[in-house]
Image: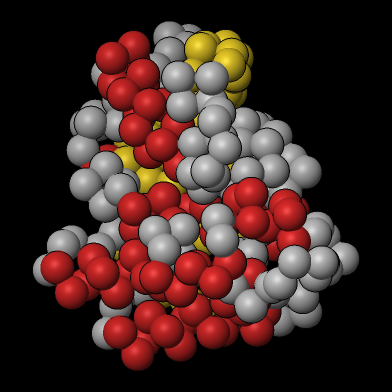
Length: 258
């Protein structure tokens, strides 16, 4: 089980960036274990606000499922294509990084073997990425997702919340008043994908009942139900922390890749 730290130049971000990678392609000969059959699957792992690329899922479980885990750095960009030069985070992970993984490691070649998972800001990013690039990602797992797009859409200049100010959200999401019909809105993407008859990724969602984002996740769950979009939604006791995310990463990974 190889661990790699890779630096590369990103044209989407206009700078050198990095990602961590776990690759289950080496096995000890002195320990008789059943090696996974079939091609290596790929899971992109998206961090939350203030975080950075790190492997926070169980590596032993990933190895048993024959899953390579890739954890890019998305800074605080909400995994969206901002309007400013060098802020195309969605294009970076959905196109540029995937192309690099295909060319360099021969993985992430089909949506059936490629998924994206994230927590908090990364949960929003996982849903948005899967819905924006359904021909690349066939599976999405979103944990305690920061589904704040409807709040951002109502923001005016001078507004703020305990996390960030209007200028930050405008830099990530674009002009708030245009967000209801923007590709930066996962509800708009899901509706558009459904109307076009496109294949929607398998969606897995979980949020803790004591999490401050629980109502935002319930609203998105209700939206998916109203649209008739198949998904799995779970609520369980828990707060906005790694204990909850680790638990449901371990629950969803076999359902995604088993």
